[in-house]
Length: 471
Ligand code: ADP
Picture (cartoon, rainbow, N blue to C red):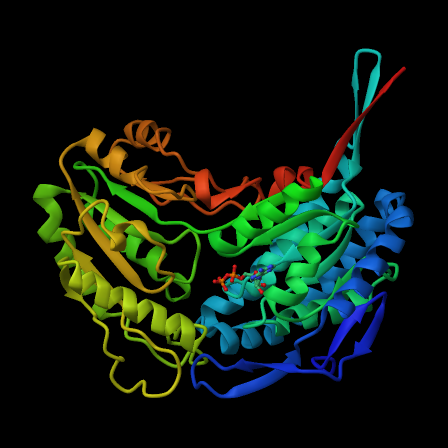
């Protein structure tokens, strides 16, 4: 990557000579890159470029859009190794997982849109009307650091496929894969101005992006706090918003479930990316009479998850992405102890042998009380709460008892029963007996977890306005 000191505006790499932001390696704490802390003017230039490119791109043919996405897909495949290592260093996800998820998923998602586009109904008949689905306009994309390229792809691919133009502001903690993406797009037939990248702080360039009148939609993934600011800003000129925010997802283990398999499935999900996953199953709800056994199984499972160098092929649990995130998670572990929950495994001390980097011990709390801060707030680290419940109604009430509604899981020996319980979740998705992740299925949240859906046709529809011609 030669362009880390620049922004990508109107098809050009534009020098930035002002302040920079340090990018740290999660496993060592060392500075590995510097990227622009751009100013509002740079962002305004990018928005102007996207605005100027919109008319022409909105009228581009499907073949043109498909060709660009095919070129993007080929580039993502070609640079997959570099993407995996970059994100592994920045975020701390172990390299084996980063190869499959951080580098693999962006290519998979691009492919799903390539498959869908030729048959997507951009017009349909309704009696004497032709209903047309038109691109919404210039889209501001603001993304977080935990799955940095995946979340960018999930926005810009359907936006470009819809005929929108885009300004991307990636997360400042893990921005490098967005530069790889811009380099790939620079080598495609995408006309200048359709995709623009400006790197910088949320409070400056992000703020300009969410308030600019030429931006007709903001697609955001990140904290509920920032999502709230974006919703307020969007209200002022009726911008469309798509928000994907926090979660505190429940894994409900019913009395007849295979307890060992359910605990293992829950822990693997909870600790993925060191818990830095918005859909992480961070609350494990177990029948009260199985609580102690579930805690023993959980403790045994996390004992195998000793944190290590994320660049090693055998590492299963890496560090957190930043010093700030590590400190926040440690504070939550201390809070859990203060609130009086039972510390079953882990704790606030740094793991042995990890004096450098942002490591935290995988931690399990038992007897966690519904309504406590530990049970209610998103921690975004490797911390599992085991919550005992009395009966099925109690389990559903606890599962739905937070402000969030992103994901969940149900485990039972009876598949129909599990489905019935899953259908009571006030969440955007539920994994039934460890069902596979589906990149064509809609993804998003109820309540404070979000507005709108990503992935598949639902992700494309977010970027389309509806026009009906009465004929
Ligand atoms: P996290 O706590 O996970 O870092 P944030 O919501 O702070 O989540 O960050 C997600 C993205 O939102 C980042 O790209 C960040 O720069 C951006 N962001 C943060 N604050 C603002 C803001 N006031 N306006 C616009 N974007 C912001």
